[in-house]
Length: 625
Image (cartoon, rainbow, N blue to C red; front, side):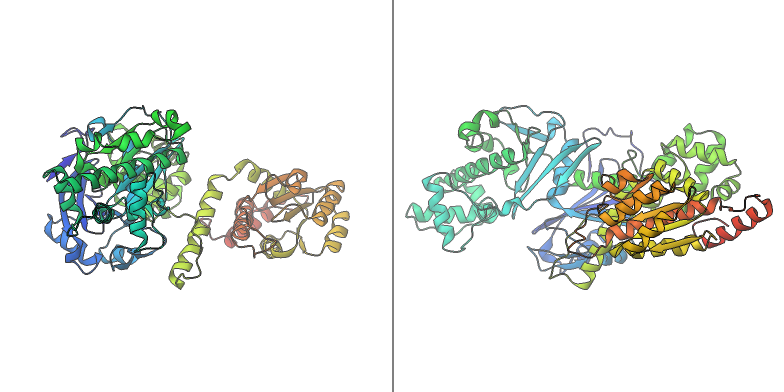
């Protein structure tokens, strides 16, 4: 079975150079799989029943054994479950697994697992009018927030927030908010549900199990004795048989969904529209369009006119989550820099490159790890081109140079899962808390890298290269960073000192001379003792490099500020991430300094300069010696 996105014309797409990508939408009841052979082209679509498999590995083996033999390197799954860390414990099944273990089991370079409604939300920007059924009026406002929800086994809720280069998804468990009845009938249903649960969430009613509960509650209210029916039989009874109680159940369900959708719309300000997916509403077809849904959506008192402007859509296309996980995987592999993974782009662009640039492209495609690990001179030698040709090749792909290209290329090859900040919980296992601490630090480092002020670094390195003496001032947790800096710079044969006592560094500052440099490390940039010492150092003619938040009083006094803006409550907690970022700045300064080692000899002895440069380079592992 092969399906194509509406934008993809047969024969006009190119297959992925890394082979087909495995995509899946794994719910509590069914798991849907496909191989995406090229952008938007889904082949070998199969639906498996989760009940028939003991775990996710057996489920994946069953699918892969039933499709044409083809090595899969990259995969992305939508899962009807919150995703937080490596360990996944499914709420609607007794499956527990490690994402990393699954990746290794199947030899995947990349395995991304996201919440199913994150995937559904990411599918929305690519859907066409033919993939949707609009219910009621209103028009979507471009580049506005979008809300998405869907009743199925549970009630999924998410949103899309517009950014400068697309959308980001909103992680949410909004289906678990308290159910709020709007009339006497719904209150009676709530009272019926209270007999079973003390807390009744919206998901208890607006879902497949919720349909069954509403049916039983209405039978009780109408004083009818009925046999409990599964959701699919209630749907059949309403849509095919015209059963009165089933019809009332569906009517009530649609009204509740309308009120909940309106709450989501006003909460998000979703002028981009509200989109409804899941396994129930799309099956209703035109019956849903004539249901109480839209009238209840707009029944918001003073905000009725506000909601009348917001369009509501039912997602009618098959397997919309495939488009979402495909978009998430493609975005991950390309690093937001093109329409396919970096390897794909290089292959597709070869015909547009010069003959010399094509030799670089061939080297990248055939020996990617070599390109990542070697310096520009060796890359040029292996490709039999000049070094400027290597730079031109990188720029032809939209990168600033070789370093920028390597960063994106490394991410594309390793297939690491995007990191984000995750709160460590008291119940976390050692594996999960370790992963979260590392992910939080890596996330902060990547954000730090993207915001790095290279101009300030150049200024700082220039000051240090001509410094007669370098002193480090710091207090509290920052003293470890200052001591690390003193140790590194002293080994460059620069006279250095480190002071962590307010009285000592105040005295030391008064003894400085023009040409001396002070590096001040502070998490807050507000300590009066440090500010007083900086004033003394500047008065003596020395330059001050501050490693501190860029809006702090210390930053405003310093000659150069190397900003570390990561916020931590250092008055209450130990400094962790900000300390790592400060140490990184010390390392960057050391590497920058070693490229042109300083010479304090006034004569400028060329032999001594060469010897010191050689000695300094041997100390730095980042340099190609």
